Length: 335
Image 1 (spheres, rainbow, N blue to C red):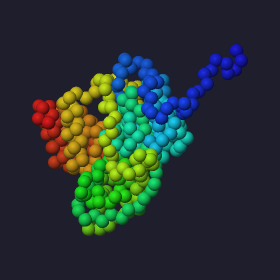
Image 2: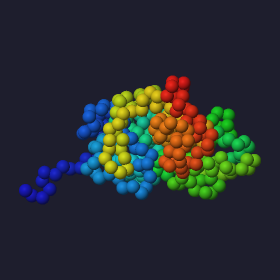
Image 3: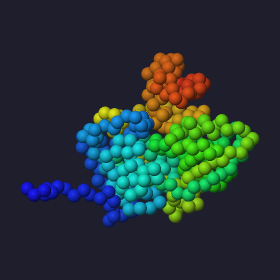
Image 4: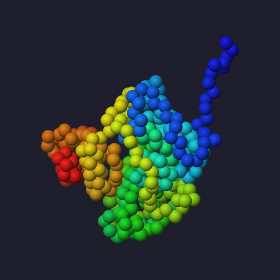
């Protein structure tokens, strides 16, 4: 047989002829057990460097559709097992550096933090990638202890604003918006920092003094230009199936059950406590804490488990006690 015969020509990741609306077809999940509407989990640990990705042969073939949030043709991406690999695939599909991707939302092109891609992706979800837009520098006078910011990160080195409390210091500065990436504080770069590190730095800034924020806002489509903060969209609920396909940084993917009703309530409550105590929201972190605490017999065992697994966060004792209480309340249906 002559060389080259019988080979398939590799399809372009861009699908120029498809309409701009999200396409739900094209999902190919061999070995998933037919769990329509399941979720892919890109667990927090998978986004960290140092662990090799699983061999290609062990990765399930998941094909997703994606667009750039400000407008683009539709692309197809596959073969990623964590957030960094996802951004690399998006960059390959659209011919941009992966570092241009700030964060992704699911099933909406708007900067809607309720639709933020975290550690899991529904098998039928459409991925919108938000890329870097205008840079801006803002002087902020810290007249109160709390700035009114909630911080999150994209799992690949960028921390950004997830919520702005109404009436707060930041809320009064119109050029600062939900979705803005915090590039530096007083000239100190924050690229590569986790959300809790950025929140801690903001909290420790001296009251009564001015500090300088360098921000990068996501590039917006025309219908998003006047948007002050993440708006509610009418998108469908995510993860309609009962299975979760959890992709790990090391080893094969596994099919798991979605959180129980008790776990969902506990995760929501713990996420609220994270925001209250630390100025961050992170449902994946909250889920990890609930998983660690649900079988512990007393708060001391829970505190020890947290210290072993999440010691870098340096959670205060009162926060740990409140989390233990929230998990207990969820078990008996008090939340």
